[in-house]
Image (tube, rainbow, N blue to C red):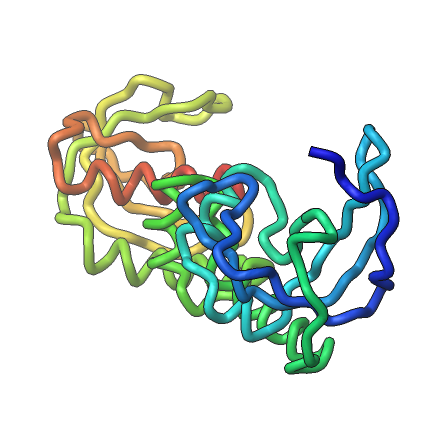
Length: 228
């Protein structure tokens, strides 16, 4: 199958993928009629013509969510794709570059944790309306979520390295309630060990019983805290 080396396509051209084309990385996904702008014209290692397409806002808006999530998880950019020039045809432009930027900003907000796989999907639900950079707002969202979701009191064990504090890794504690959100240490809870009361970061605790309804929410929070 001889590929053509020359293409008349230029950067900035609007193109539509020909009908029935499967996605190069996901055979089950048909990308026929997806449309965008040519952003690179080059060739592969064998000298075959290759183009890069940045999808337009309408294609981005209608993309299957699993495709975006999977791309994020694999560290691949879903907003563009490399194809052979003969897989596309010229098309009428349907939007502006501003439209694309706007959709991508919205999309990255709703998929900013997708790269964490299943954990990420649950984290995303908690932080649905929170900008990734707004840690304080995220902490507020976690506080609300934990307040509603966790059943107090619950037994936990201190995990992670502890400085010379009163609590050491492996200590069993009883968590009583959420206390405050702290920029540096995240959500702080009130807990007891024996008769003494302490305040301790939630991210340093682990629910002992993994059948407990508290286990998953707390684990998700710890994953978020470690990757924030």
